[in-house]
Amino acid sequence: MDRIDPSPYLVYSGMPIIEALKAVNTPPVHTAFIVDRNSSLKGILTDGDFRRGLLDGHHDLSNIVDVFMKRDPTTALSALFLRIGCLGCGPGPCKLVFRMVHQLRADSDPS
Image (tube, rainbow, N blue to C red; front, side, top):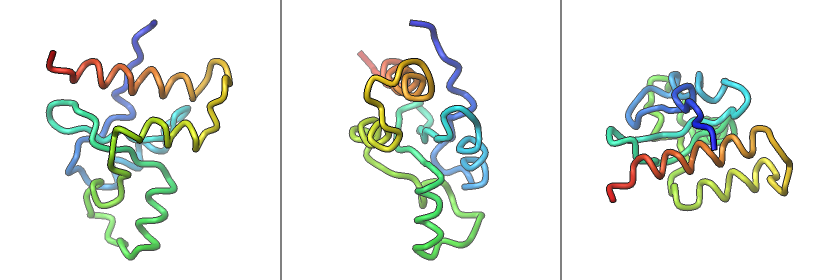
């Protein structure tokens, strides 16, 4: 399996939402992966998460990404696959996201 450069999609917890939106706007994944300083996955952010945050009253664009992100990285991957409809879709964003998340988890595993 080829390694993927996840850097365009990684945003550190505590960063301004504007930085995360740059990652969300980056094709082909259009998702920001929120990590801590140890590169452990803390959550994801999609344009839908941002819209829901705005509708919930978080209008200040100096807010940190943590206000908007979808927490629970245990289920983040399955939620993302349900969102983009991964059912054997072949090469493309779905497999790219799976490989990136799998790689992030493997890289942050202390064992």
